[in-house]
Image (cartoon, rainbow, N blue to C red):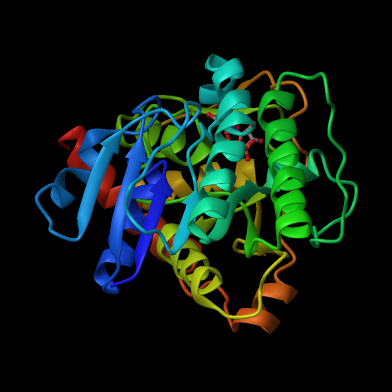
Amino acid sequence: MKKVLITGAAGFIGSHLCDRFIKEGFYVVGIDSFLTGSPDNIAHLIGNEKFKFIKYDVTNFIYIPDEIDIILHFACPASPVDYLNHPIHTMKVDSIGTINTLGLAKAKKARYIFASTSEIYGDPQVHPQPETYWGNVNSIGPRSVYDEAKRFSEALTMAYYRKHNLDTRIVRIFNTYGPRMRMNDGRVVPNFITQALKNEPITVYGDGTQTRSFCYVDDLIGGIFKISLAENLAGEVINLGNPEEYKIIDFAQIIKELTDSKSPIVFKPLPQDDPKQRKPDITLARGKLGWQPKVNLKEGLKRMIEYFRGRIGL
Ligand code: UDP
């Protein structure tokens, strides 16, 4: 049985990855410090003979006795609110944590998948964003703790690929939503759905003309799974996301309609360096993996709304 190590295993995306690899017959070692992840996300896996959980912070030296075939480094706060609350730890997990997991991959001769982000493109001046775009990041702005740590981790990953011939793959993940996001993680999808379900004001930051493109978690997991298993992808960098682009103000309206909510829409200040537009160019993923998202926005949001209704008890 192949063995996979997933850091950030109790996070939103990490926990879905654990489920997928176990379902496909892999043995999964999951690591999480619970800084932003939650035991609830993996409670159903405890006792599963194909799953071992280690509560641990990967910024410390990692000792794993087992053989490991694939390492997926997914630990890191990912919501702007979370990484602004934990700026130093965000930088440590995507610098020291990346070195530790890359070192482990080298020792185990494992394939290495790094969870990067569309944030490495910063406030992009090229639209949509292809992998060849170098980005437009403010290195000393508040978001830099996340953006620069992810960029540094990309550089580290490529250094291990070039210097040690490690089989590395970088996944640049664009905005993703779905069950197991924390209701209070501060990102736009959980915020708007929670506000709409409670008939509280929906908080649009700025004038709402900034855009985002939202990918349902099942689609994303399918793409990461393909990237993890495909042959001949060493050294590759691949965008994963849904290219359907929405203005945030229109997105608020869609949530209002889907939840049949009486919430007013209110405008709040735009956070500093909030990217004005974002949409993945997924030509590479389509060509190399035969991957593209299947779940459209309204369908995905309906599933997410049902999940949140259950959590809120409505
Ligand atoms: N946003 C908003 N209201 C909220 C939360 C977020 O208008 O309550 C906006 C935010 O300013 C950004 C977009 O929604 O333009 C997406 O924000 P999110 O925090 O989900 O992630 P980002 O894509 O900025 O990393």
